[in-house]
Image (cartoon, rainbow, N blue to C red; front, top):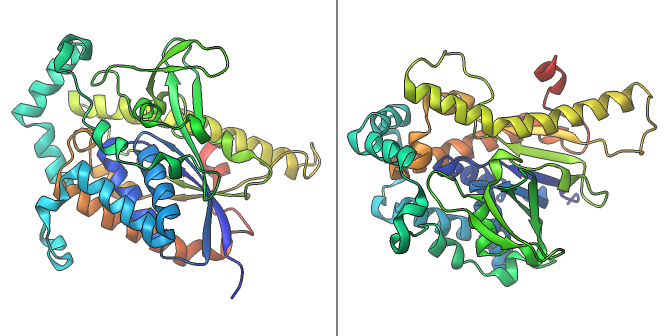
Length: 346
């Protein structure tokens, strides 16, 4: 049997829409022709990456799948919806569910309160619901040198810069920092190991969604597979307040990824034109797994509210997208880039 193709994964954040990434990972873990060398993740991508690594070191591919399943059962209360797979096509359309949540009175009231009331106003009643999920990870495995390298991104509130956590710096608090939306959660404070300064952090999506530069290290493979859960393009002009807010959210959380991809495209052109010699800089091959058609049907409402039926459908959509990617582009891995960055930026 041929050696597996080594890849890096870049996992976007996007709240409960990260269940799509769960499905992608679930399918990729079944593909023994692929070895995951490194993962860079933000927010939901950080949760997925930590679950994958801890499970991988528990029981290989099967352990990673099981740990991802457990994580999303906790997030989406999927134990309450133990429906057989044949019933999934009969579930409500996820776009319809998203719009129903978006215009529901509890969601609208919650959004209004979130814009007027600081998360610091709750005092001793404040709690981060993700904390008990993340605390259950085995950080001896999450931080281990063995298995895929793991990088988690958060945004420094004071200077706006991305901070990448790896190795023993990955803790419950650093993962919560990566997923800290400032209108919902209090900033997560962490001590800088070099300066000893206590810094506050918000969601990594503002500065790196996810950060790609940790994956440039020479010992890591050249193939970078990005799992997109924030659509890069929307045909429909947003005109209602929820639509406008949703598109602002998507553009904000895609801007750092587009910046990094533009830089990769620039380096590729320099190498191709002979402006810099081959080998002077890492020449990444970029691939993307996404379902923009589905994501265009959804909104920020189902990012914020973990609807079990939508999470189940997102997982299945992720599996389908990964399966289609493997059918169309497995032979590209290790040889050529399948994402058209020139078309994206020209």
